[in-house]
Length: 150
Image 1 (cartoon, rainbow, N blue to C red):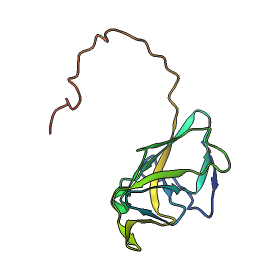
Image 2 (image 1 turned 90 degrees about the vertical axis):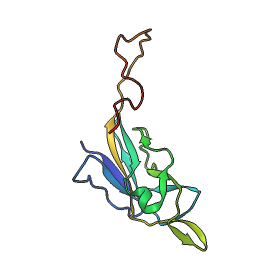
Image 3 (image 1 turned 180 degrees about the vertical axis):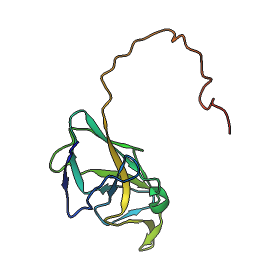
Image 4 (image 1 turned 45 degrees about the vertical axis):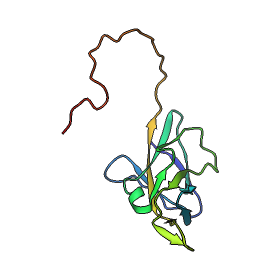
């Protein structure tokens, strides 16, 4: 599958990682995010996703440890209608734990080129209908966390 991509302001070029199905993405702007505040980190690219596909954007496993930020919506979903020339992808974040200080204010520095998140594309869910029933006729599993301990 070939996906058309547009880069903004000398952004870091994207490549599929060799181990796994995700593609690392990079901050495209130097930023200082104050502890307790939100920000939108520009990622420097727009994609033309094919109809019937969507992008899933998530933090890398080291994102919180490195910068003290969390993605505000846990995972971002970008659908195939977000394909305009200026539809640059962003990562919405919240600085929970500042790792640096600027002018006596605690926060975290994000630098252009920092490997900040990852994404993958997936087919959208097929059309479904719900059939309402009184019983499934199946045995109960036992509730959440019912597979045992250790």
